[in-house]
Image (cartoon, rainbow, N blue to C red; front, side, top):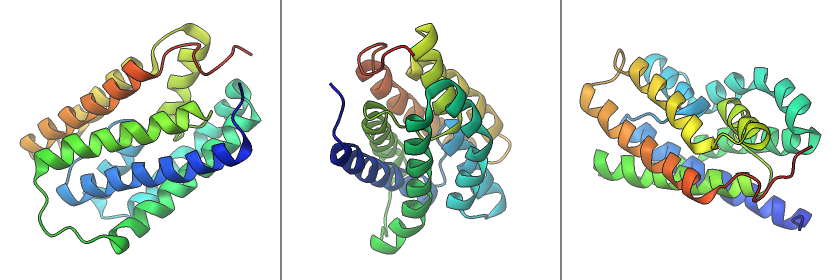
Length: 197
């Protein structure tokens, strides 16, 4: 049964706010995650550029694949979700002040928050662009679990992080990425929410 428009809108807002909170924890703890957000965090940590701007820009090349493979509705929702995460990741540090943040806690709860937020978006036919688009396409059309595919991509991003971040931060980031992707892999099953086109 299709979701109502207000249900989709609520999921987009709440899901992206939850993801942005996880990103904020990662940014403050100098951690990274996987997928396009991980690449944006890596660039943010390496260059000082704002996460939101980098995240939005990195996603632009993937919308054509999204439109061709996933349809206009998914693409529009994903575009909105990416824009909201970009905006909320800028606003969240203005709304909360974290004085003391243990990196292990940030890795685990931040990964959990991003996983739950992504799950909300996936269940309402939206993603966060980039690798999420490719992962959902592979799951929907080829039966490859989105979470497991993303875990492989995330590992590659973590290897790149070894050249920018301290080793202990990369290990913590990897633990957080595992939490995020296990949430998706265990809760988002092929065919449960999407129908083949």
